[in-house]
Every structure is written in C-alpha cells, then in structure tokens.
Amino acid sequence: MNAKTCVTFSNKAIRSVIQRVFTEIKEAKIKRTVSVRRNNQEIEIELSVAICYGSSIPEIVKTIRKKIGEEMKQVTRLNVRSIDVFVAGIDHSRGTGGMKS
Image (tube, rainbow, N blue to C red):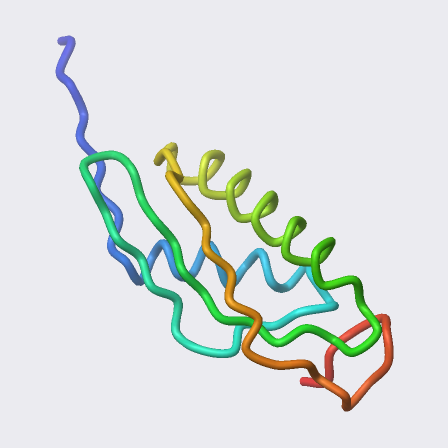
C-alpha cells in the first residue's frame, strides 16, 4: 500500500512548539499571544517578547528567529515564511543572564 499521508497542525500545537523554544532562551520571554497565519504548507509567525536588560537585542532576536525556524522545520516540516519579533518590553528585574519568572 502506498497511500499519501496528510498531517495538519493546529495553531495551538504550533504555539506549543514556539513556547518550547523559549525554555532554551533565558534572555527573553513571550510577552503576548503568538499569532500564526497559514497559506498551504507555509506559516507566518508574529510574537511579542520582553528582553532581559543588558542583553543584545539584535542578537537575541536573531537567536529567536533561528531557533523557532529550526524547531518548526524539525518538528512539523512546515515551511516558515516569516518570523516577526516585536520587542514589547525590557525586563529590568534581572541583569543579563536570564529572566525572572
């Protein structure tokens, strides 16, 4: 039997993958709900984050985009068309090295 298999992911499942990435990024946390838009097998992701004071914002945003893209490709095999990161705040509760939970 050579049947073609179709797998669909809910937006909630995609958000869970994204949240998993943030367990590895200590210098940032998701600030608001993640937005996911789909077009066939491509997705567009928008998210707002708070960055830990003292961290290099461009480097952290680059890391966020890279890790989300890698994780989405590995876990879902979906093509990520774009990852838009909006820095909604700076967390002053701690210096560099991590965010306060």
